Amino acid sequence: MSAGPAASAGPAPRAAPTAHAAPAASAAPAASAVRTPAPFGRRAVAVTARERHGAYTLLRCEDAGGPRPRAGQFYMLSAAERWGGGDGERPFLPRAFSVLRAPAEDRRLDFLLEDVGPGTRRLDELRPGDRLHVVGPLGNGFEPPRERRRALLVGGGVGIAPLAIWQDQLEDSTRPLLGFRDRARAAAAGLVSSARVATDDGSFGHHGVVTDLMRQEIAGRESEIEVYACGPPAMLEAVRAVCAELAIPAQLALEAGMACGFGACFGCVVPTRAGLVRLCLDGPVLDADRLESALLPGTGH
Ligand SMILES: Cc1cc2nc3c(=O)[nH]c(=O)nc-3n(C[C@H](O)[C@H](O)[C@H](O)COP(=O)(O)OP(=O)(O)OC[C@H]3O[C@@H](n4cnc5c(N)ncnc54)[C@H](O)[C@@H]3O)c2cc1C
Ligand code: FES
Image (cartoon, rainbow, N blue to C red):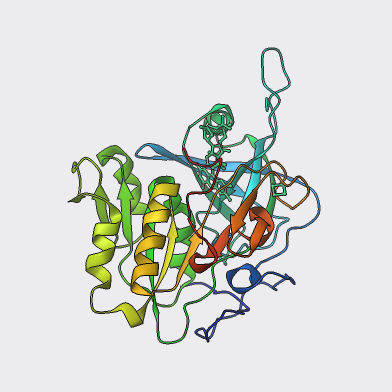
């Protein structure tokens, strides 16, 4: 186990956190309060490894100049060379990625990518020795579970990324539950320890959705669990609905289209019960009870 978060300000008492990086001030409540601020500007870092995990690519880099991120925080990434602007290339804004792993003892940062378009395809081409521009860590992170509750990590697809680092940082958690479309994608489940897996097509693990496993895991333990979830919008909405029905607190790592990642462009605005928020600043982790729905407009792939 490595270090955990340094500060908490939730609606109910939370378990004592262990020492980590310094928190920054935030006006937003609950899960929005915990973050490690990014140094100003982007940094060029070296890619040190690239691994395939089923349908996904793990990209590792050495971030000598950056602070250690909290679980749930993200980085804006772009390739240092050939990132659009050339002949026939679309000029790219950087793309947002959750940190998959960032061991406290070294300067390593791991990301998990799914090739869904030109930006992720270019990042997927990077090999050891290539250079990457990083801005981060950005946004807030997960908060420790409220007192007397244990963390239940629930992930879908490439959304397992922030759960791997959270599992590393938590002192205690129940067996994680992960959902994937098929066996090829489920190969990435090995990045999270001891996970139970569901696949949509039944080619590996439970045949069905991850919320089937979640209901089994939670039954009779509603007062002992706090859910941490990241995945596609439909999965997050199903998780939110189950947690609302059973009165279980949940922290959801959400996505929205992000152009800057630090509050300047308003491209990532999402509706909450209390009004619109910029997900890059107030999130990406939001307490589920702040949302009417996790099916946020303009997101989903
Ligand atoms: C906070 C945050 C953390 C993220 N973490 C990861 C991660 O760990 N691994 C990973 O592979 N991806 C992650 N993403 C999504 C990633 O940023 C997008 O997949 C990427 O920007 C797509 O860029 P592209 O140029 O390849 O494709 P584009 O052509 O830009 O998009 C391809 C398709 O993906 C959809 N899409 C693009 N961006 C988003 C988004 N932010 N949310 C939902 N749908 C989107 C588009 O509508 C389109 O259908 C994260 C996004 C956010 C906001
Ligand atoms: S991404 Fe620019 S304000 Fe959030």
